[in-house]
Image (tube, rainbow, N blue to C red):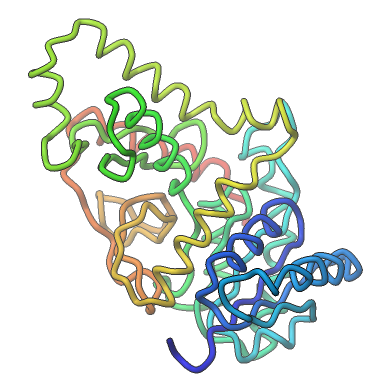
Length: 312
């Protein structure tokens, strides 16, 4: 472990606090600072986490603070912004969250921070692009949580369907983290066996319909959770922790994060959720997987949806 592993979290709402709680329990960073427009809320959340430190896996520093704390941090994680309400899509949040994101990023950069920014605020692909442009940082230093949660949901449901540990399911959701996302069926596998071979071997006429239903559940999962509890937070909190671990441990892990396309998939000047190698540099490389013709069209559709929703 390097001498200092300092994370600054901007946003003490449901997502930010779920992430903070996950970080404390996994214990691989040395310091967490929580910033929020409501300073008392940030202070209260930090106090609450500190009170459980006697039972944590490591004795890390947790506190609240201001943007000056970013100056010596290695990672700034932004979860702040307006929440998606019942009946809203993520794209409905664009205008108000663009203003919030620009203000936050300016404050982060003004502190002297010059390392990696991880964005979770929705719509995450567009907000990641706003953060990159506003910061002026190279694209590899600014990434979003993307479809890591969607892909995790996908693996869990496929694992349940095929009665296999979801950690042995290799499948991704790509495109917009939103209604135009799509499953990459052509590249999915269970263990080392391709999904197409598994389906051929099973020869179950119900599989096609059931798999389509699984993707529908993945795409609508956030709406289902929000309708029941008002917010999604634990799943995305754990996804942010997973990305954070890949960064600090220099893992070179492949995760479906929001990153800038610069010619990959025939697209430019757009942040999209695609498989990428994540390490201490941030996004080391965008992986250009071999999509079939239908998946190519679905990716192009996601790009158009996002471009039409951008606010400059």
